[in-house]
Image (cartoon, rainbow, N blue to C red; front, side, top):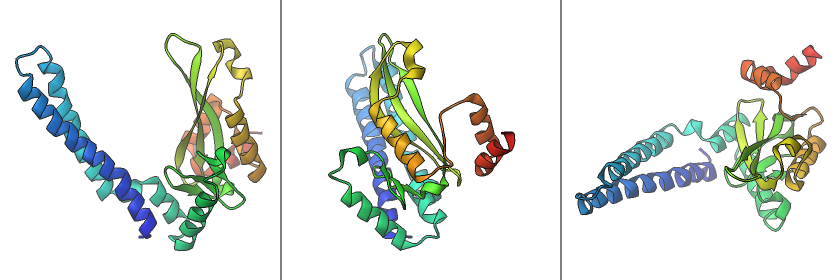
Length: 216
């Protein structure tokens, strides 16, 4: 396996492993110290969460093909030169604020934080997903991206403030930038969400674009 990909897998899961151990030990200590308090039932949950995270991280370490970075490396022939190109692009883009969350170039679309890298032609669909914050007109945003080799990932975006009735007519600057760049590098990409598109994707991700053309 490529050394950079391997290190990424270890780095992602060792953090989770450490958190699991911390919650397990911390939960046990808290339960011993505060045994007589009324919080005992709640505190009993903490060690169990720790155990869950511990075994989940071990599973992810053992079943590394599920890691998104590994999937990308495997999909493009397990070639080390691809990883080198991706790292070079990430290093070049460190001073570019627009490329902080997603780098979009002629050769690669890269999410630096997860080391996901895909060729522009392999991105079939993208849309913005919004979740309202309770009691306010603020909405958290992320762009969801779908590839033709069954990899999906999310790109965090800035929150927006709007009435629910105006949401469909609003697009924030960062989302507009991503959509423009994605369209620039892949003329066939589908942008935007509908239940019909969701249904077509779930039914057959690899032939998503082909099935859309057939419907039209």
